[in-house]
Length: 201
Ligand code: GRF
View (cartoon, helix red, strand yellow):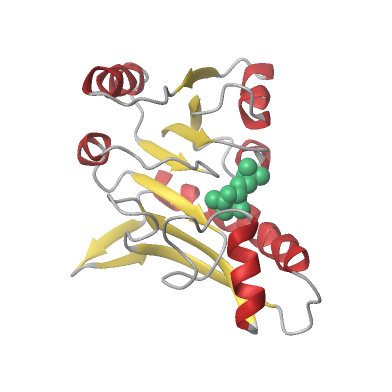
């Protein structure tokens, strides 16, 4: 399966995908795209000679067409948002319907939406005094963190003393959950039936 990963930051999820042994025979990481030409994740891709693409700030129709052309040229079958902070333009969502997924560092539908990224999420979870958090992988639609949920994993946070501790525990889970979901996509084991997303064994 040909994959494109969209990133904006440090790229630990990108690394988890690249390092996952099971994925090696299942995926071909054809492209890494970012809105930030200086981010660490893009540097990881460049050092591995993976094709990269910098998504421009102003996304007019022509720019979106250029991005779609870049993806289509590489026959991308699945787009993975791994810490990508910008909204995906409606036109791209339509072109790749049910083929764009995002990882969110909390249990959706709580603690999601605009502005809920990075430490903002973990601070909100900490302040709520929630006893569990986790990671969610969901389909991307035109609203932040609102698409149908594909898979989730929980972690006990009843004993944490800081949002940073939550972030560390959740990130650990993200690095397992995202490769797992990508593997299931590559094996064509993710189905949408009656508006629910099913993962087959
Ligand atoms: C992760 O926590 C991810 O869930 C969120 O942004 C963070 C990206 O981290 N969407 P990294 O760049 O993969 O290290």
